[in-house]
Amino acid sequence: MLIIDKLVEKYMAEKEYDEFIKLLKYFVDMQESKINKVNIIIDEKGDISLKDNKGSDILMELLGKDLIEEEEALTKEDVIMSSLVTSSPKLVMIHGSNNIKNKEFLNTVEKVFTGRVKYCKGCKLCQYNLCCHNKK
Image (cartoon, one colour):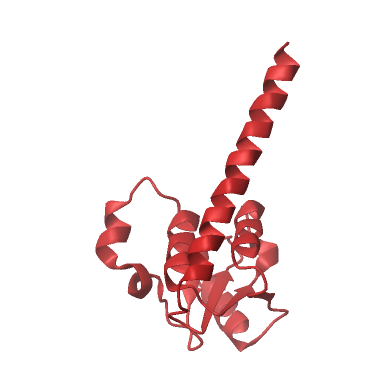
């Protein structure tokens, strides 16, 4: 009986996740893009940042400092996903994907932003960020 309970629980969790993804996709599809391109950069430690093409951190700009400070219970991935959904970028470029600790985060980004996600194979933005993080 315990195995059946676990299977039902897993099925229900997957169903809830799928419904959540559909809802996020709906929000993204219904709103106008507020930004052309967002760079998700995952450094060698697995830390994630959201940057523009010049390498400037844009997370605070997209969500607002007050919101980030108020939401202590949220993970950084939650905050980034929220800012992505809110800004609905035309392109989400992911840099350093092999450094990610939470692979489900990238899967969620791909599902919510279908056709808008690309993976970088190495660029100046990647080199700059990896270089800067290695010095810390």
